[in-house]
Amino acid sequence: MTTEAIRTRGLTKVYGKFTAVDHVDMDVPSGSVFGLLGPNGAGKTTIIKLLTGLSDLSDGEASVAGFDVRREPMQVKRNVGWVAAEVILDDDFSAWENLWLQAKLQRLDGWKGRADALLAYFELTDRRKDKVSTYSTGMRKKLEIALALLHQPQVIFMDEPTIGLDPNTRRMLWELIEGVHTEFGISVLLTSHYIEEADRLCDRVSIIDHGKFVASGTPDELKSKVKADIIEVETATSVDEVALRAIPGVSEARTQGKAWILRVVSAEEVLPRILAALRDNGIRRVNVEKPSLETVFLDVTGRRLGETAGESTDFRKFYAQMRRARQ
Amino acid sequence: MTTENRFGGAFASREGSGFAGIPQGRQFAGLYAREVLKTFRNPFVLVITVVQPFMWLAFFGSSFSNVPLSYLDVLLHAHIQSYLQFLLPGVLSTSMLSIGMFGSMSTIQDKRFGFMKRILITPTSKATVYLAKALGSATRGLVQVPVMIAAALLFGVQFGGDPLMWAGWLLCLVLLGFGFSCMFLAVTASSTDWQTPGVISNFITMPLMFASGALFPTANFPGWMQTIAAYNPVTYSALFGRGIILSGTANWLYLGYVAVFATVMVTIGTVVASRYLKVE
Image (cartoon, rainbow over the protein chains, first blue to last red):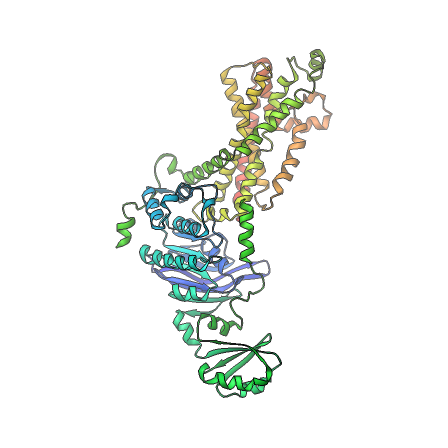
């Protein structure tokens, strides 16, 4: 058995002149949950494509489940499961037929018992013969995870597992992912742009921006890197930067649009002073943030996670399109 | 602990004997079955597939109804009961021209909906996906054959030949359809545009239909068109069927030509697809 579920050195993917993934080194220990956190277009999905053999490496090396992605792609594919961001199933088929096809594609014998157990685990047993097109998004997602587990992979890739889901379904899915990880003993690589998701699910997280890892560590390590609190203030009139920096306890100040982002030692102490100093500027909005993965991201990239880097995907639009296309 | 109890015993194993032991055999069987199931679950598509060539027979086949047979014998260089009798093998052959469109469209749909990713993330090669789509297309196209033969009987066409010849002719149509499907899918392997299959279909079908012996004898053609028809496998499939129907004689060389065509197409297509089949 291998000790590392995923290992990459200098992993690079170039599309024309655009470098989607830029010399990424990654070590995912077996049995852990690893999170790739970053805005849309940061290169998260491309990394999954490279590690599952859907896309060829431009440079560098990678091994998954102990197999080299370039030299033994078929072995890699036998040992990985994949849950797509956009929930990819054959809508004309029932849950059982989707499982049947997956079993064929993975060359499985004696898969039916396991498929039954998976359907029971995901509470889909009584709908197993219904067409997938009649399922709710949550059920579709569950079935997709069941498909990914059917051939007992060593590593499972989950691309934005909860994107576009309502809060209840999201929470349910978090519990499922935790369950899948502990119960099936599988290594998980998930991508997300939800901080809370990575914080809750992941043993280790790497923050990715423009194809590069900008920070890595456990969620706690990352949070402790940002020792300060962050205060965001937006005012009606412009603010004198020198005056802001002069406030005791403010260690850093930078603008973002009309707002100022201030790094302070302790928000509880410094906030009254800031408010006093800006009294005449007409304060429109104040936001205090304790260290979280979001502040880590803000700290290392200067942008919030919600603000997308260049090309972005509007998932609401995307889902609407998928629904229309299916009808 | 729980893993072994809850999901143990059902520990899936791989490989097997017989057909399942062939590399990619299971993946091919699964994907092919998927194509066929999808076709037969969509009655609308099935009906259109059958009705279209039927209309060819009904309308085009009836367009010489009031021409005296003696004139037709001169025009068609053959002794016939009706133009329909002459036309049937031709229409069956030309209807194999565009059946690759089905596989091509289903390939593009899989790319668009991301299902191609789901397939290719498993140990399934692009060549396997390609071959399953091509054979799926050909199978779908063959649905037309029994229906049209039944329709021709209904219109009063009489058949010559024996069961061996009929089986040979069926094989000929399978090979022709498979060959053109392979060609079609290879041409559209890298496409993700919904409109491509329709455009390619018109592009392939029209010239190859008329520049063949399917509708009229090639002896009436100008030289350059005769040259095209002489290489066109549709000509040989039509002549093979016509020989059987009109005079009960089968020229097995024609079947051989179509078989060579199918072999060449599947070889080229597999190479092209394993290199250029796009994932999305």
